[in-house]
Length: 424
Image (cartoon, rainbow, N blue to C red):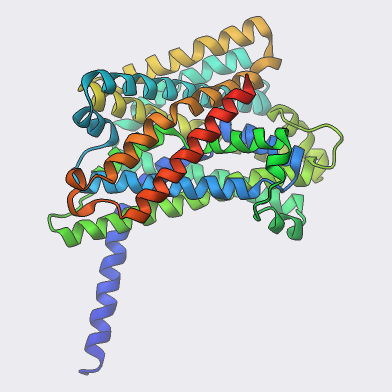
């Protein structure tokens, strides 16, 4: 009996640790949706259609940088009890803090524009709703979100998890239908210098990086992770840091599967065509014929709709966090949601109304350009503060983590600026 007792004790300890880990599962899924929003769809489709599997390594690199940034968000809250917006207000002058708030708010509106357009396109594909009216219908989701937020974080996290899994299943089924060339696919994960020699490929690669790391996600994650119980001791907080990092890493791994899956799907289905397929609606029209299944296009549209609605939820939450963190302004969720969506709806309706539905893809690209310009103003203070031993105490980021953070920030900011320059 004595020989069994240590084994039972270890099993009980592992079970207890696993249950504690489950308590930290959720925020990562809320954050992950920002890495598979309609803006990513546009760049992933273009990358696969034009260059086959060659840019898969860019998606992998972007995802690894995202995992690093989200870990730093967790570390910030565990160490200080503050989210990124509150920390910026505490550490910077009022003028700098207000500038960072404006930058974050512009990024949230640009992100919401992408979600609105993505959802409107999905409604048009599924039900034939004109984009103009689809955009208006999508804007009314504020009522649904208002009801959901009253139920609490856990309900939101459960809904988001279901939508994320819906996206993953739809993309997974389409990959099975597409039957990609596995050998070529694996080669795509090996970095090459070809991207530097071909300006068009470089532009798309930079677009993928800029569309993957979302500035509002840094504010969101650094706040909602604080809804968990870290405990009072240093040991329990270190365990919380580890479990919360696992949560975000697992969720972002699923986001990587979706983004890489979209590029692989586009490469397998459209790369052999003479003309690249860069329009989401055109991709939907072609999928049924290319994959030989009448439901392929429908799965594509369902995943797109789930993607848009998912990112809408997290965008609303990020808007409230940024407003309260930077300005100490308490506001009702529906007010923030209505204002954000209104700011995104107006340019969408103007473009659709005056330039026609054919210009929507251009507007979607521009939303990613605006987002790219905001990245540095979120990444820089996050890496700087988490590397400050005086501010972070015993939870200061190790030097190698801070170094990777600075390198990732330089890559993200450089890629964003190059992407914007190329867009102009």
